[in-house]
Image (cartoon, rainbow, N blue to C red; front, side):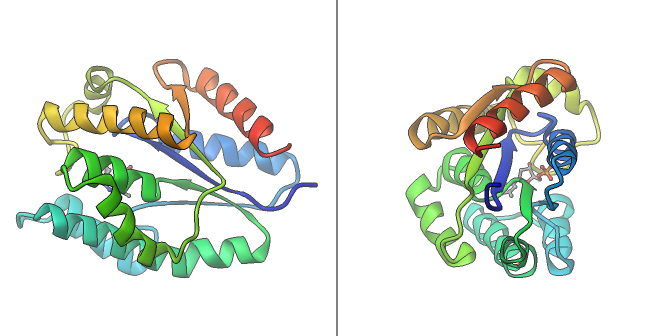
Length: 203
Ligand code: TMP
């Protein structure tokens, strides 16, 4: 039996990550593995307030403040969920982690991948996922799924969504993250994610 793994599902808005996190966790549990699911931003009590400020607040958010607030949410998430879960021997499947900050703040906001990565090192204390899977969906297809009722980041201009999308693709190539085509049915996407996990996590 292989040891616990930290798997992160990533991608732009409306790529179906939260559905796939639950599908993947269910399949892992069928193998009798202990699995915790989580997400960013907002999985802790403090994080919920940070998420509210970031996504639904009325005040303008400077890009650096945005990166720092995402990192603050992450530090709390690591302290309350990520580290205790991995220490307990359970698997952790998270909807977003540091890669989101690299794509959205590093590339999308233009703060620089290296700079954003550096500030996140403090937040994570060096904890890194074993596997990052990026659900790849064009901004056009994502926009159709989002419809109306957008939060602050979903309501960003098209150039931002495009930059984030390209950012994920470039980062995936450079860092060995696995791109999965998300423009398919949830069942098809779940099957591909499962085969990637079986392959990469020795299941
Ligand atoms: P969610 O809709 O997947 O919960 O994510 C909330 C929004 O926050 C989404 O637009 C992506 C954005 N985000 C960042 O910009 N940087 C980050 O580090 C994280 C975790 C999320």
